Length: 188
Image (cartoon, rainbow, N blue to C red; front, side, top):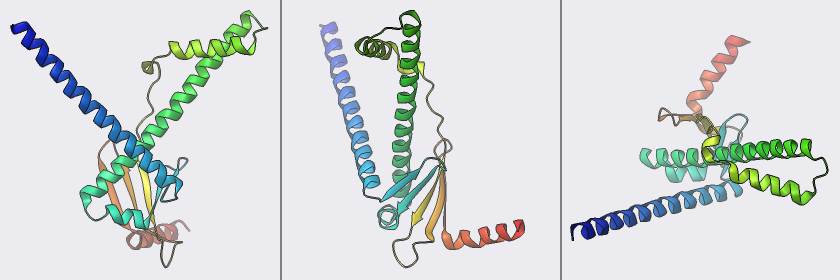
């Protein structure tokens, strides 16, 4: 009887854990979908080369009502960007591994058909585990809140977020602009 009760508890705990995991994944998928829609509509834009996120003033206003909401929003954006970076890195890794496998096979038999090449690629993809690739490094990024009103050429605010340290800095453009001017004057 003890064993039966113990197994029942274990199954119940496993079901709870599975339900919580499904909920977490569902929430993650929803956030990813919403941020992708915001990007498609131009409310946010990502410049990967300079690691800059541009945020529309009206969107920022929704989250800047309180610090906790803003930090949560930027954290969600970071997760979304990191997921994108991981997907790109994973796809590039897979393509490189497929290419290596095809080149090896072509060294042995240079008359492979398209179907054979596709089969080699598929087989190589199945052999690869997530642990075979080193995940991309988590880096901080700058964000810029873009004005939607009187002077769109100048941002409303700028900031920096570093997920690894949990630190965020935000300043209005009016605070930053004189500092940049002073720096340019000393260089020039």
